[in-house]
Length: 287
Length: 301
Image 1 (cartoon, each protein chain N blue to C red):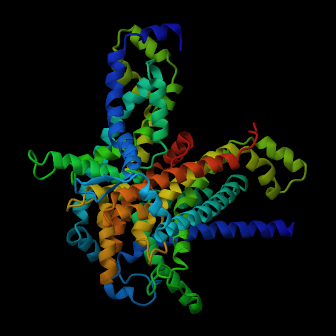
Image 2: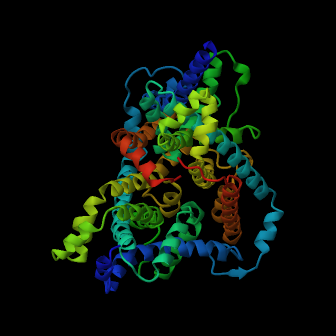
Image 3: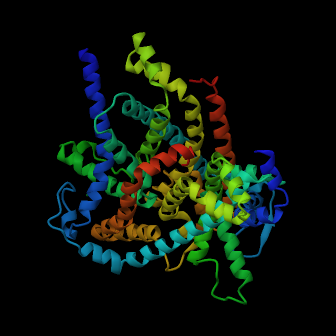
């Protein structure tokens, strides 16, 4: 009996230790973002002297994180709009209509689930460069590279397989009776889709929004590649800040920048964590 | 579908096409075409911006075999996959079993905390771990100094022999909570009676894990394993790109980061894409292998 109790205590200690290993570094960054330059020398395990917000001012203004923040919001929102606008109708049709080639479409989309966007970012970049070059006479400044809207479109396109997969499964789980009743009442096909089915699919749509929000907001490889100019996203800005601050050994601004990136996501996560976790169970797996 | 519904759905070609076309066009342009291009470009040499593109057949692949840096990146990728998969899966299963079976107090808080890294971006994680691993002012070396264990201090990201483990720890840190939550949800669907029956037979909690829990979630475990391998290939890249840049001296280079380097820094797009083909083939083969190796008779409950 004492052995099992000892085992139990050990297990609890282990779980607590793992949780601490995750919580402490994150909390430490929050604290360190208030430290002055001098405070970074010596032991890292000291509390900041006071609530200095100078680091935040530096990060927002001097390091342009405020501007990058707006770019990120724009790109993320546009990406979500694009992906919902194209995925919902497609998923609905795949779930509800018989048409030739449906099997092929489903297989292709399923295969798309296995193609990670980072595998194909090089050809996407070259393709966009090529388009810009062939447009050079009309638009000498280029259109496709360094365009936040194009970045959103690439985000949306590469998350189509996952979004359609999730939405189709959900549409299929809704009984057809509602649609039949509505169309007997004379509703058009478009109205049936937007007014009857879409509201009922809200849980799946929310899940799609959540996962894609995280993917778009957190991406940096595609943003780094497709927005090489000044209009960076938050993540790329943070990466630059990281490189710059390492050389200058002035960490305060970097940690403030990290907090700016982390806080919106953490707030969202705290608000919707149950939704997120339920959605994960429903959606199966997504890395 | 009822016959009435089917009839209703005849003559809907226009509607179907209008709904389907935008998604399929985007999917084709930004996913199918680039994927095909990875394979096609691997047969050419091309510096990217010049129009001069020469067909060389399988030459790029032959060169890969003699490229020590490529072989090292390949070995690093395999090592990371093996270590990170075993550790993450093992710990994830262990934690999930404790959380669901032991009715741990404060388990909602634990779940909340453990899942946090999954919502953080890779850049943030790289920055956090740079702070942890920093040689002078890092949390890890600082903690070791506090505990008077100065001898254990390391240059965590600058030592060729250690850097890969440092990256592996960051990967486990990132994905542990996600897999724990995933397994918690599949374990919680196992009916309580099965555990009651097995504890009447005198099985301990540890034994129950192997005789009840594991066999019953096996199918789910297999699926997650396949996806895990693919996302780990990817995560190792983004993390290495942001944290070490492949250094020191290629010690933490992985396949995707080497491809990226060849394509952009070196402007050998064809060669880079040959690496891309290897990555595609490798992830496909590993998934297949994992799925074969873990095949068991499905158990129902």
